[in-house]
Length: 235
Image 1 (cartoon, rainbow, N blue to C red):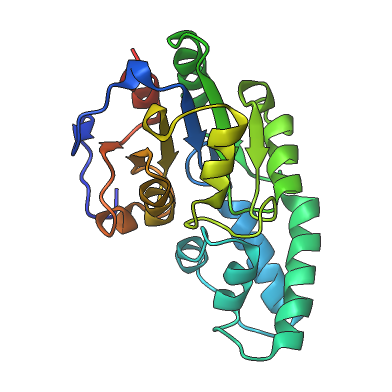
Image 2 (cartoon, rainbow, N blue to C red):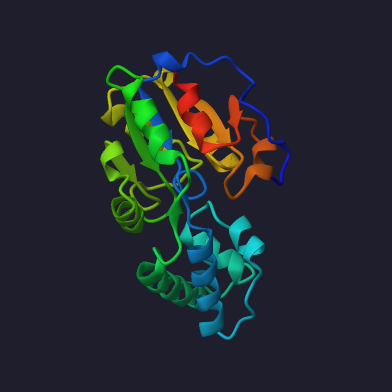
């Protein structure tokens, strides 16, 4: 596994009383689902459409996490042509809408981990906070049979700001009547960890996702390497 963290059992940078957690907020891409190929194919389809050279898959994957507009901008080389960016984003979103489930799968062990987290907590709630637009986020979770686990599914266009701004996380706290000290965010990148830090909630970084190397930038309270360990955290 690339990045700063080698594969080990859970590592704690700060003690977390997981049984006291009432809200677990999940990132989507690279945390619950492996959507890498569909995102790569959609970005490269957009680039071909605008007569740009395709990018290696690992490069595209490294651009994921800040939402579709930033993904497209990065793929275009941070183009200054706003008209081009607008048209490219429209094409990417339309293509991805049609191909978002061609190869996307749930990471092995995630359904079982979600069941454990839910069953081991007295009324514990779970939510999704992604920078992906909310409609494809909800559609993907529904198609993959995960929607029922979550009381809220929010995307990058659900609020005025995206992660790492804490607005989304704080709104989820308010909607679920949860105090910050009773919540944790789980994700695969520094964006999620910074979101948690900004919102004053605990953080868990997963190294099996798209951007484990970025976890060094904002060290999580706990680091795990496999989806099965998510359930173990809440035993």
